[in-house]
Structures are given as C-alpha cells and as structure tokens.
Length: 380
Image 1 (spheres, rainbow, N blue to C red):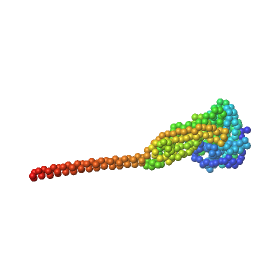
Image 2 (spheres, one colour):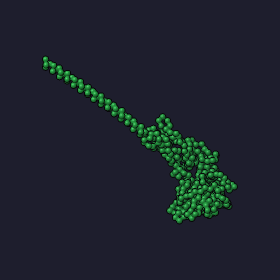
Image 3 (spheres, one colour):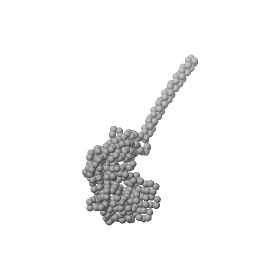
Image 4 (cartoon, rainbow, N blue to C red):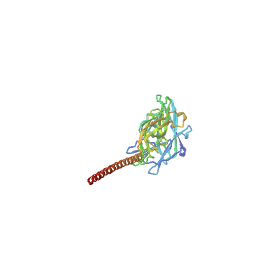
C-alpha cells in the first residue's frame, strides 16, 4: 500500500502562509524557469507550508512535515539519518494541501547544495540527483509519487533510504520535495516545499572548514578619524565530509596588537561537503590608525538537535593587513609643520634684515666719523 490519507485541519502540521510573486526562490534554488515555467520554493525547516493566491482567488498551498510511526508530526524539522553502507532506513513524511482547491501533488527526493549566496538549496526539478536524493524510494519502489488532495487533506508517505554499499563516509544532504504545478495565462508556477534530509554514512569523518580569499578594506569619512568600518570579504569552503555551520568572531587590531574596536559576532549557515560560499561582513567603529590588522575566527559546529551527530572541529583564524590614512591628523600635522617652517623662515629673515641694518648703521657712522675728521684737518 503506497500511503494513507488523513482528513484533518492542516494547522496540525504547523502550516504557515506565504504570499509570493510569480517567481519566488525561498530556498535560493536555481529555478528551472523558462518562458512558460516559473518556480516557487520554500524550505520546510522553518516554515512547513507555502501558500499563494492565484488570479482566480484560489489559494494554492503545499506543506510537508516529518512524521512518526503513528502518522502524526513528531516535532522534527528535518530528516536526520545515521546508517552504515548497505543499510536501509525507513521514515515517513506528511504532505498536505493547505489551499482552497483540490491540487495534484508530485513528491520526490533530490540533492542539496549551497548556492552563490551560501544558502541551502536543492537541485532544479529536472536535474537528476546522484547522492542521497537517488537513494530514496517510496512504498511502490518508485523515486516519485503523484496524487491529488482536497483542501486541508493530508497524506502520509512512507519512504526508504537505501545507502549504497560503496557510499562514502560523511554527510549526504538532500530533501524530500512536494511540488504543485499552478497553470497561469502566461506561466506555469512550480510551487515546491522541501524538508531537508541529512544522511550520515558511518566511517571516518573529516569535519573541516577553511577560510579562503580573505580580504579587508577600510571605509569611512576622511574628515572623521574616530569612526569608520573595515569591510571583510572571504570565502568559506568545506573540503571535508561533514556538513558544518560556524560561529564567527571578527575584530580589528592596530599597532602592537592593541584592539582598534570591540569584537563582533556572526554566523555562517550550513556549508555542505564539497561546497563553498562567499560572504561580506563589516567591523564597525574602527578609527583611522593608519595600520590595521583585521581578523576573523571561525568556530565550526554541526547544527543538529541530535547530540550523536556532533563532532569536534578546531577553530580557524585568518587575518589581513589594511591601511586607514588619518587625513585630518595628516592635514593638521602639515599645517603645524608649515606654521613652524614659516615662523623659522620669518625669524631668519628678520635676523638677516637686523644684521643688514646694523651693518648699514655701522657703515654710515664710520663714514660720518671720517668726514668729520677730514673737515677738522682742513680747518686747522
């Protein structure tokens, strides 16, 4: 038997609504859109449902949620699976219609990746999965199932994750997707909701993140030496085999390692094995100290409520050197130096003029004395 169908009010799945534009990518997923096709996607980790009102006033709604053996939501926000190579694991997903009209659903599995912005994303609809998305089969042995649901109707689907015997150790990440095609006058919108799947295959784990392309530049008003910011541009890569998030601590030091500002915190969303993402951050309140030494400490961790999935990862530190010219101080120093030089030049000029005057007076006095002596001699 493929599945069981339940009729219940869908708030049991914690449904949330979303009014979308024609094309929305809530997962940051590359769309399979063409001139006649658009895609709407929503991650089920934080919001299990996506709804949108069509031009005819009909609301299209899609929702998914992990379920327990009793067929009810069990509080999980994602599927976390730990298995040995060759092992098969069974799980269940609830798919529901949160809209106002009967809808045709397609449910399938696919692989995940990090998009250019670093967001958790899933392959486009037409792409063929090669990792955990290809391991998932439903009760009838197929890799996708289709069915129709009335408004507020829920269907429980059982699926298996068959880990290949030659599967590599570490995390293999994908999602179980529920899709509804909404036909419009000019476009067909593929509204998708995905619940992520994290499958960890037993073996040697290599949890590792790296900071690459770490660059820094100073930005601020030239006339204000006390307030500015350092802009950091860096890439976080995951060369290991464990999906990792990370806490960030960034700051800036100056001469002799003296802090130029307080440390600031941040967070990097999950970076999947073999993926990388580029980010920009700013460290505020940095003065123009000429020499600046920005730094970032990356503290990776496994973002999972399951304690058995946690691993120990060594923090990573990267720094750079940039310069912030204190123009107001430079201009003030130039003005003071110019004043000193001008004062010295005027003093020397006055000394020369005084000496010339004294020489002139002495020369005039000598000439007057010689003339007076000559006059006396002629009179005698």
